[in-house]
Amino acid sequence: MSGEVCLLPMTVEMYHEYFKEYENDPDLYIDKNACTPYSYDVERVDRYIKRQTDLNRKAFAIMVGDEMVGELIVKNIIEHKSAALGISMKNAKYKDRGFGTQAERLAVRYVFDELDIPVVYADSVLSNKRSQHVLEKVGFKFIKEEGDFRYYRIER
Image 1 (cartoon, rainbow, N blue to C red):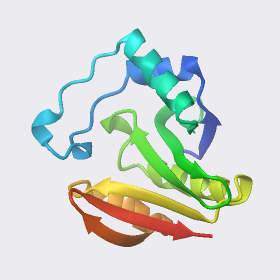
Image 2: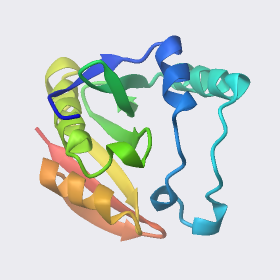
Image 3: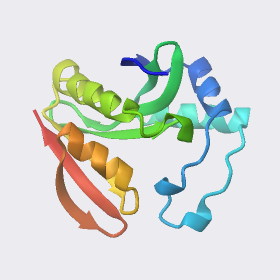
Image 4: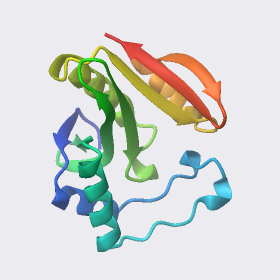
């Protein structure tokens, strides 16, 4: 599979499809021992969807053709000031293929142009070198390292 990435607003049905094939990524855990296999659960996914809605986040499916490969969330939105990005690929099959880089570029353009927000933040667990590489490739600048995280920022 190769091709152009696009972002589509996430629907309830898309979330359930996504989580049926989701696998926990040990790179996203500070304590690797805390990473346990993910098991699809309808009620758990419904709670996750409600949380995204309650927090007023904008959730997108990362699509390559007709296939959903990940989730991208615009969060911590402060109108006309700043927002933050969060990204997760569905499973290892979709990593290291450029999909996350393309998705983050699209998301940054969306935040800058559609939401009229001039600053976007992102963070990464210290051990997640893949995420840090992608953020820097997209143009995010390293701000600081604090605790178990590295923090980044990009400006319009």
